[in-house]
View 1 (cartoon, rainbow, N blue to C red):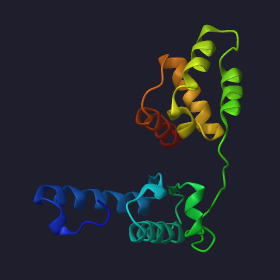
View 2 (tube, rainbow, N blue to C red; view 1 turned 30 degrees about the horizontal axis):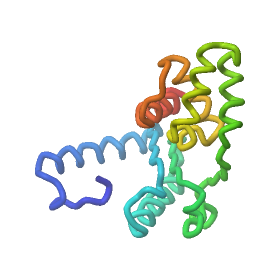
View 3 (cartoon, helix red, strand yellow; view 1 turned 90 degrees about the vertical axis):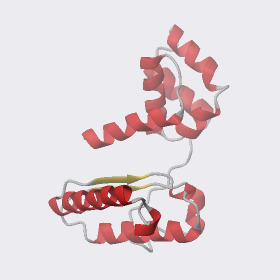
View 4 (cartoon, rainbow, N blue to C red; view 1 turned 180 degrees about the vertical axis):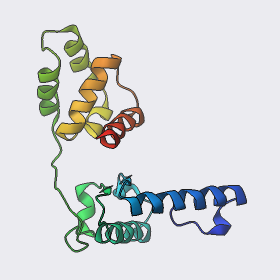
Length: 169
């Protein structure tokens, strides 16, 4: 989407892309853009990652109107990507282990409740929990999601909810 030229899209897709680009530029100029690209480490190749980092650096260096710009990546990416070199804010967050996720859940859900007991029984069987609940914020999100829904979904509905929290702030 970001890098495709006119030949990459159907005429209708290209027109929509042009409209989206215009809206993004407008929102940026007006200081009302929230841009979040999650999981840089999952992009397809090194040149794509470098282009994304270059675009984010450009946006941040020209951000005079309080736009919100987020780029996330696993720590493993720092072998080739140094946020300080690109003047990007970088935060190293170490992953929580399962006992820390359980401790957060006990804080949210009463340890004696059926909800906590069900949550505690499920999280050991679901690798999704450690993938998503690897930071305190996302561990809280997973726990709150479970409290409301009574089950864990794929990670996309939970990420969707997290993004809505970010956009609403």
